[in-house]
Length: 168
Ligand SMILES: [Zn+2]
Image (tube, rainbow, N blue to C red; front, side, top):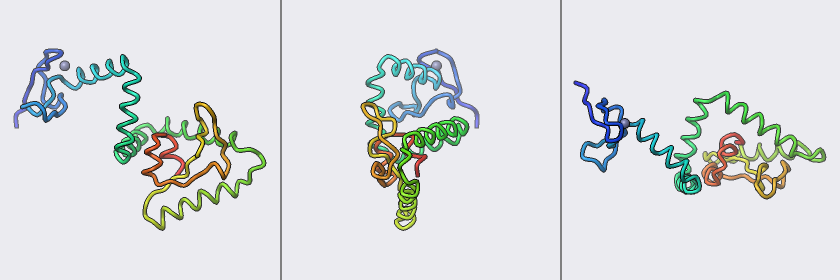
């Protein structure tokens, strides 16, 4: 099949149709501007409207926890080095947020219980910090009574990306 071309309404270049995102609102089924122009426009808008962007993103993540988790997992697969470093930082913070008087066995028990629940129910569960370790007004501790077991769905709805995948 011959390659089809289309004019971008922003940069005015004739580009192959694969250079355009699909958009059902248009007769052509494609967006009027090319992927590059579209992305540039969206990035610019995000930069000019950081608060709106942040709240829209949070709203979307809350309404679509599965897609959000899947997207994060795809991103993590593409950026293993970054994720490993983040995980290491997170673990280090957990160690520093764990007072010396805490019995590590009590914490392990919560994680074991979480795995057992996931296995028994067939629904992935995560261990979550009730008061986040990196909270804004106050930071929680890595202690048994600051841990709760949530379904992955509920945990991801809290939109703390990192905890959502790594502390399973
Ligand atoms: Zn363009």
